[in-house]
Image 1: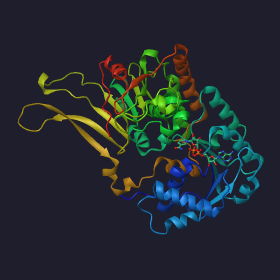
Image 2: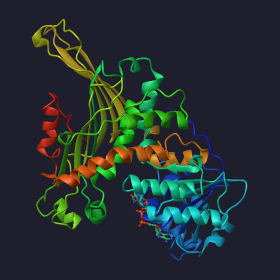
Image 3: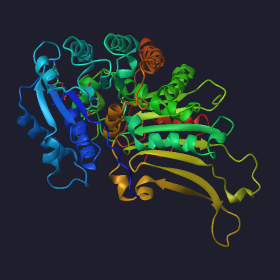
Image 4: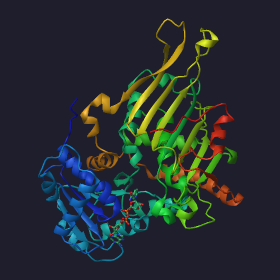
Length: 484
Ligand code: NAD
């Protein structure tokens, strides 16, 4: 199957923080792959802007190295990298000062889509937004892309929203959550709203519960000190897991359009009940041989920040009353695996004998690795052994269904950047959504602090603290295995 690549309009894309880790690991390799696919037109320009002193040639060398190191894509032919680099430029700019802004302005052309990617710490967002206007680089058509973390709590998120809103309209602001750029996440919407099969069953009457797991094998490593100020709740739940929860739980939007989708997601966040303290389990990974414990990584032997969290959530509305949604995410777990599992209820009555066995239908949406979906269906075990039931997967792995194209499918960043150029905000978080998510998260974190709660230790390579298993066990349920 050959996928259609529709070129985007020619653009000037300025990447503030162009020499940084994110730009080198994700943004430039992603743009290069879009170039290889033919999605970027000849006139497109990407301008890196950062503090370091460098010329175009030096920056191109840096970007070439980054693309070689972090993935160029199979489809790229010899010579393509050199062709791509001709579209790349550099300007030294001080986000907090006045240096470099006039020169950067001189790089921009009129008549093209203009976008500014803030791949810098959030403390610079306000200063950048202000200077883009003061120096006349941005107009009412320009777009700005902002990275996570979007705030540390409700107050800081509000302040960021306010700082951006002073210079840009909400329709110009693209808040990135790269989970929303994943192929499977969009497929979730296609499956839910493009088929008649699922939506009639997508409610508390037929769904027993939902599990969302984002498990990592890496620890916090060198980012320990930074991570220790946020923890799993702020770093993963408030943004990525909540976004997944919204997409799985939302009502059908009237149209697949930015505000229609985001209105429905916002309603889900607002319908989330406060989580009871005993419905949350927090953990910190232990030392593993010579490998340091979380507290050693964090550089604080008394840290109470969690590297693991599991929680039971309720969306308080007609569709989901009584159906819990369990969230779980952590570091140094058994495998790198992210999935959403919709576990349907038992058939209301079994016509088969006791020993035939019983299986539940489970729809699994895998985000990584091997993006795809799988629906567990009960059938008869083949052979003459009488009526014994068997659970078999109806599997839709994208790699199999789409053939070699699947491997070349754009990764989340490149897809989202192309959406910015197209002016499509559907897969970006709106300011009120982010604030609502913090408004739900803040009291939970404040509760831990007020009660002086300390996370439970867990073994590296495990599924988290035992209490997390108990969270479901108490409800007569079981977490799905974490496996790659
Ligand atoms: P980094 O420290 O590697 O790079 C920071 C960049 O900002 C550099 O290019 C630096 O020159 C530039 N910069 C800093 N101060 C400046 C100033 N005063 N004027 C102009 N430029 C200045 O950071 P990073 O890891 O690339 O992260 C950038 C942003 O993306 C952060 O907000 C981070 O939280 C977010 N983010 C990063 C990752 C990742 O994997 N690295 C993932 C998700 C989100």
